Image (cartoon, rainbow, N blue to C red; front, side):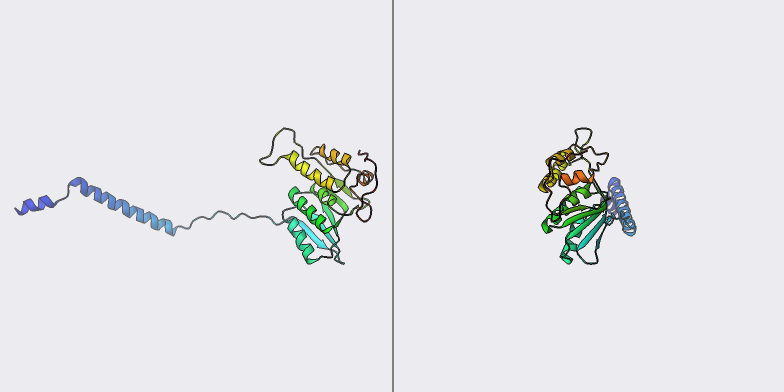
Length: 226
């Protein structure tokens, strides 16, 4: 009777093997978890945003703000901060090959809100030229150059969500709002991306790109642009 009782309480061989395998698997999972917990997780390299590539300098009398470098992210905010700290600023000088057109539009808004004058002593092109036109009175030094180019592309395609023709029309609207001669505006709209167009000072004056003292464009016929 005793031998029969022990035999009846033994587990079938398949169930015993299954339990052993299951216990081994659980131990393995625990070991893997402990090892993973002790292993440092590799962190991705942080995204480093380079600082803006421009400089704003105040004149000794505090009335002129000199901008040089790239029309870069943060320019609009930097202009607003400078004006908040120095409300006596009346003029912004520009020295730039261009840059971000959206920041240029923001800079134009700031110039127009504060009725600030603009001046170029050396070189101002592309997005910088748009900023220049946003000035109330606009002046070029005798040897200064102002450069313009178009946004057009060779094929009928858009770059992601950006339509170059639409972006150009937005900027042309700024030129018109600043009373630039319509013939000059239309010439800008037809320009290629390259080469840069540098109108002479006489054409710029006739088109109202540069102005008479006080911010008033001179009385002029349609500009002869060449």
